[in-house]
Length: 251
Image (tube, rainbow, N blue to C red; front, side, top):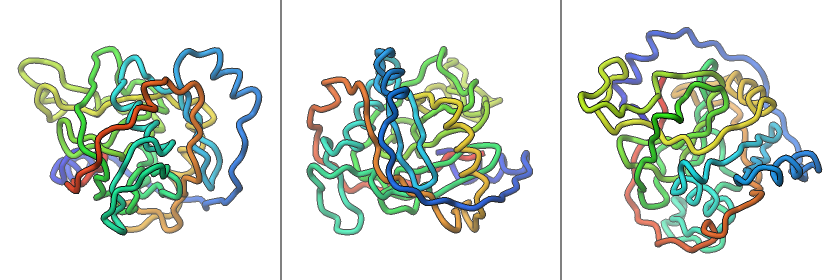
């Protein structure tokens, strides 16, 4: 996300600590309560079944339709993507199945979505940011696209564990010096995870980690279940290209 120089600067403002252990569990079926809550909402809901537990997030298809369609397409296998292991285009293969959370930072966020698990992957073509003044990082549990600059969204995403206003979009004509970014720069928020999921994010973020904030025993996404998926998300997109960008949210 933010470039490496900004990463170094922002890290100086925080003291990070890590603790905890990862846990493994089989994929759980959606509970009747979760299904009922999703049905009550007109928005699609994503349930990320992971080896540490489930993350349940409402998707903002009205605010970020491109990001939501991209996420659902990759989660369900209706969107083609380039496999970094074979350099071949995958068809009808849910991309997020088996993908790890490769970067975890306590008091900040967890990041995943790279099929190669390195944070360098870019398995689908870039798409434009969807920034809104009334959708900011003012709540814990924001689900947002990772990027390497304006309009470089691909497959990587992150989930915050607290309010992080320094990631808010810059929409002012003169830029936003306090955010160290120009007009039009920011991170597309495309969902909101529930309170229980935020607690799990905190747990994952505090797992032992090494260089590059990579966890020693990464939590893995087993499968992403989509409830109330809009019909447009099932539409097959263009074939992915091979461009690779580093995508990493920076504190």
